[in-house]
Length: 320
Image: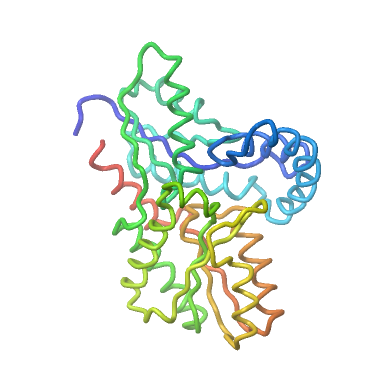
């Protein structure tokens, strides 16, 4: 145990403050302006983003947010706050702050919160189980920018990812087993990860391998035959090729091939959000059923489950 006072910074992507076109537009502008997310030449990207994408997508995405918005707010924010509170309750002597790469609360506000509590060493836990330059590296970049203006920089430990961490795999396996017990074992367990452009992987992002690592360890923990598990990639954006196979196209093919019962999990999401609650749980369900499938269940993200919080305790233990 270090003698310096340690705090934990939980980091995630972020969410609009409200399910309105204006709030969504503010959020998307910040998100899609990050070179880690879209690295297109700014001379080409700015006019396209501001003149076409934001005006067209913001009202449409706002309607989707309205369909999943919870009484306490955006699902991602609701579950992230619950995670923060639950982890703080498990570690009463360790300050826990929440920061988002885009929107609020910002990473800068989270750092200031910890420093105001006398923290001298920050353990950064980006809640992205599988590393990608478009997510984890964006947290790294922003923290570097924040620290660049400070005379006194705290010590920092940065957890790159936890794709094959035993506590994470056990939490996923427990969630899958509970779903099987409730709905029956399906013909196929489909693991849908968020996609990235194929080019990012070609240029060195090891995200696809980290997704394969999670899949391999989960299949082993569940003792399922390989043919009963499939890995796909969702949420593609733009025209260039992304990681394949695509989740939505796979749903249609499975239904057409006579697969009747599937259960779907998105292991890359630490908290349920628009991409899981609307895209996976609603849109992809419709694709599967319309193509001839009969039973479809979405297995929720780990959110603030006790196993997930214990995983966070375990991941940060050696740094505290």
